[in-house]
Image (cartoon, rainbow, N blue to C red; front, side):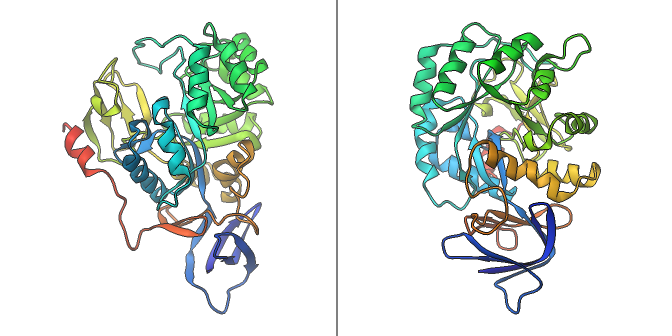
Amino acid sequence: MIIYSDRIVLPGRIISGSVTVNESGKITEIREGKPETCDINAGGYTIIPGIIDTHNHGAGGYRFDSADPDEVRNCLKVQAAFGVTGIFPTTTNHKGYHDLVRIMSENNDGARILGIHSEGPWGSRVGEKGINPGYPRPSLQEARERYEAGEGKLVLFDIAPEVPGALEVIDYMVSKGVTVGNFHTNANYEEANAGIDHGITVATHLFNVMTGLHHRDVGTAGADILRDEVWCELICDGLHVSLPMVQLALRMKNHDQIMMVSDNGAFAGLPAGKYDGASMGSGGVSDRKTIMVTEEGYCLSETGRLTGSGKPVLFGLQNLVQKLHMPVEEAVRMSSYNPSVKYRLNGKGELKEGNDFDAVIIDDDFNVMQTFVEGRCVFDSTKETIPYSQEFIRKYRIE
């Protein structure tokens, strides 16, 4: 297969040319200039590396927490429509890990599962305007059960480092080769550094639900920025983190250690309106008995607390390029290449010869035209629509 485009985003540069992909889905040649013939003419469009989203709970009315294989597959299809080619389903439901592991080996028409991300369950903090119903205490025995349930595919595990017993859990996960992130934490600078000393190397959605920058104690956010061991997840939707704060992060932290994530939930992409909080699987506890999805993309609890993101990484990529004037070849390093390096996802994250052809064809407004995973077209906007769950909308939308 030969694909032509006026703008192919390669490491550090953009060319007009063609990409040749073999039957195994590998890139065999990238050549400048228009080929004599091609299978796909994407002239006028841009080809970018497929997005690798390592923090994603769901989308389009589907949740990775559900532990329902068909729902997971449908969710992966929606993710592909958002330009995601590789994903870490993010869930604390370790009883569903087995199905996620099984689906990893399938050639689904959607994003490829590259690992499992457990965000919690051992935290200490809720977001601004939130009501804290309490978190369970860390248990080393349960940590072992969660690791074993992942069948070697639990890649990222998050915990608040300051809670009693957290450091022992960090030590255990690190000993098993699992990357550990700090999340939902009230840790001050000293406590955050203790967690990093024990092996934390990821900031779970930098700035969100963690102690922020203050001139007398720079908190967890400051420790994450200052410590070279830590790679920072960053939500660039302009809603979770304001764009001026995104700019500050980009000036303070090495760009090679920033990974764009969505923190999408089931409401991502759904119509604006009020939804029953029972759709989150939480039974409507705390301040999430109802969820409001706004036109601009906020997902808010009854108290106005952010409840996951309604915008995909591609929207954040558009913000960086169009609003912060970052070159697209620089921005895609944070959406694709950096997570591939951090999590050793060989053959992913860049358009180069020998790699998998994981790619997205987008228009000038960052709309997805086509998405390819390992050489297969898994979403084509000219032939299909995004398969949002109409059942979810009918069941849970209140008004």
